[in-house]
Length: 132
Length: 404
Figure 1 (cartoon, rainbow over the protein chains, first blue to last red):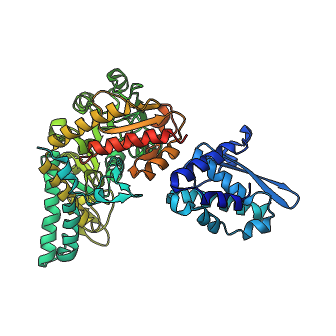
Figure 2 (figure 1 turned 90 degrees about the vertical axis):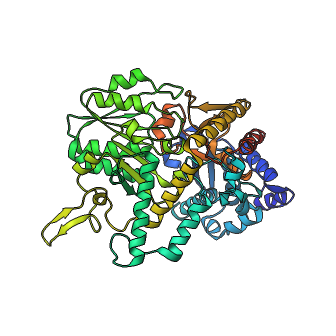
Figure 3 (figure 1 turned 135 degrees about the vertical axis):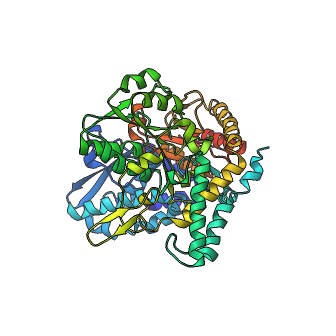
């Protein structure tokens, strides 16, 4: 599934409950992150729960693996990876992620601290796009 | 007659809706809501009575100085201290404890001494002693509690000895709700010649406090947890101890004679209130304490005990929930773990249901770890908590279970 399909699917969901059941579901389907990456080195700061994000590069494209100990956050990671995976650094920098979150209705359904967590994740990805 | 429905009307915030749901505020242990008379009194001061204290030679300044000092008198009554001069206004309990560490601790503690604290301390009553230990070289000892969070007299006595110079202990744990037997502990500590500081942040809100009966040497609490404003806290200290302590900070309003070369310092409490104090907040705190004393601390205690019993009964119905801290006679603070649900996830669902709880280590990370967790969810009660709050809370817990 790509992000435009996700936005379409989200439009059929009524209210926060269905959206969050769906997000939790996405998190459950996220491919597992190998235990050796669950370390301080791969942690994203600025999240209230533990979040790990591991970048990989194949030729000119980047892709990421991620995990969290909290179910909703893990679902949000799945969405973030759907947005950014298999993109070039230039594409990553040009993505208007706020618009995507707005289309998904995540802005209105997330508390400020959770929004900050999402921002920390996307900033980290953009940072990797700069240096990798 | 304690009419909680009538009392709730005194708190404008409780009438707000949160995410379209009734405001179920179960985070009073972090910071309590404010009754209308506190809010209105503060607005009134800013609107009609405001000026600086202890300085002006004009009517407004004289009157507000009198109000500020009256607030000190209200704190004295609230704690049943012997004198107004034993009440020092600070920013919060954290500053009160830091004041004792910096002023009393630096002067009277030496490297052969021991400071004794419990396993159940908030960071505010742990970190200042660690830092001072590193500076002075005394030993910081920690007495163990039982696995259910209750006080263990054997562990306490094992750690208390002739070298103990200070016992710094919480009156009621902000995580476990355990109420420590302060009077007995203070008497035992005095027998070995130790002074006693009580972190009473959670303690003073839930029951009558009598510092003379307790015979504690210092006691700290925060205004914002006693239904008063933020930015104001209290340090109670016995007169002769405060008199023996050097100032904590230096500047205006705390000096006697100042020349370019030297300065003599004022008597307590002014000695410890350098600079312009939080005038309006102090008066707001006085108003909040008046509010509590008018309701009656015994009545508040009785109501909260009934709500605590009800909460216990309702939580017992949630089968995957484990309460952390189950000491007999515990206060209205409920830390818990729900099997298979991360506290962050739980808090999210609760928030959507209009329920405020706290999640994390509750500024007592070593204690949460000692109880076997990294994160806990905590619901806490206030004088306005009613059965509907608790019913909505337990219904939301069951709803959350269906998500994960």
